[in-house]
Image (cartoon, rainbow, N blue to C red; front, top):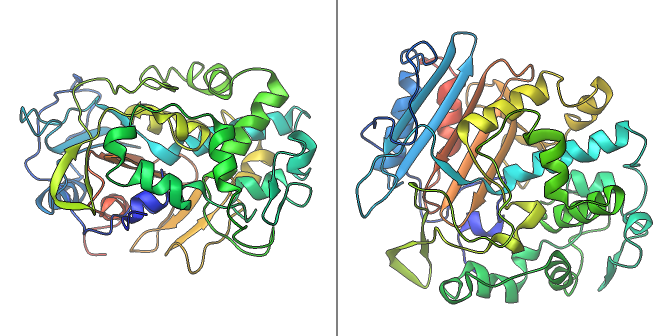
Length: 391
């Protein structure tokens, strides 16, 4: 499969590309939305802006970020939304957010637990009888909680050789509009052996969240995305957020760009793709304002009861997999370079890398997006926001 790490994690939690690290330059005007002066604080984030500019200088086409803290809202951009037209990135730009989707899926699962409709310590087989079988996988030995915190051992479908060649390598250019069902993708995963015995280790697996999407549908009788909209995005007024299903488009103006190891010298526009293969593991399209609104509401106690939020932030070690990170239930606990601990999620999918992190009380949040997937450095921007200049 492709050697680029962002593709290995799908939508993944590391959001780093093997090809290098990059950040963007030239702060841009608000091309994607207008922000009133009273709403936006344009000072006090010099380090964050510098980290964004550095990403562009390293090769990222464009960056957009929004910060919310006790002083108000700061929005910054760097680089371009479209390499062809040179249009700068704008404050309201929408983008594919990849694995950030997992935080919303986990929130719905925890709401169902609080309502007495879901038991996180029940087995996967209890809810999806007979689905997780084969090559050593056994759904009678895997719990819902283990799916949520990636201790299930279920094989990660983005590491399946057939899938990786067709969707993550240069063959993507011919298969980008193909339809997938979650059952098809799960079946591909189960053709491989488990990563480990359930509960004995940690490894990121996008297959876990396809299974959780199916469990939500089994428990509610509604599509998982409709349940998220009903419970989360509509109540919070997340008007820029949607779940595209098989729709290959991303709202203008931002384009998403990628490179492939089979043709390393060329940058490809990968904006259009059918994200049905990502489904509950990472199909969501959104913007920085909506993600800050979601995480602030989550950490502020507006979406979950205290007992459920406590479970969500009870994280397991990712030692040997993700540096400076722990994993809860659909949440990453990340320790910045200066030791500040923040919570949220990363997301990577073709041509797009997203970071959404904040303090545990939800009072200081940052969400940022790169519209290129071959350059890392997103966590550098997060650390720049939370660390004092001397750190």
